[in-house]
Length: 66
Image 1 (cartoon, rainbow, N blue to C red):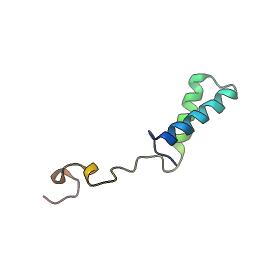
Image 2 (cartoon, one colour):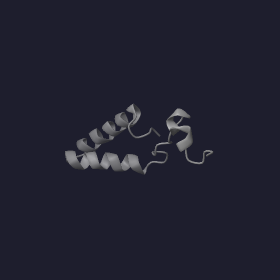
Image 3 (tube, rainbow, N blue to C red):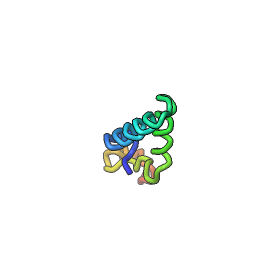
Image 4 (spheres, rainbow, N blue to C red):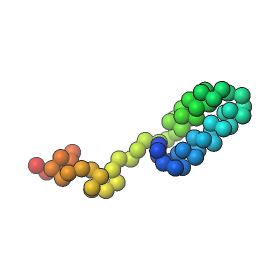
C-alpha cells in the first residue's frame, strides 16, 4: 500500500472519491469515506526515516551512544 502523502496515495484517494461521488454520496462524505478507507488499509503508516541523515543529529538519535 502507498504511504500517506505519496503520489500513489493521492491518486488512489482521488479514484475512491470519484467512485463514491458517482454512487450518490455527497462531496464532503465522499472525501471522508475515501480517507477512512485508505487509513484502514495495512501498511498505511509512514515507515519513518529511511537514512541515517533522516534520523537526525547523531548525538540526539534514540538508542544512540552518548
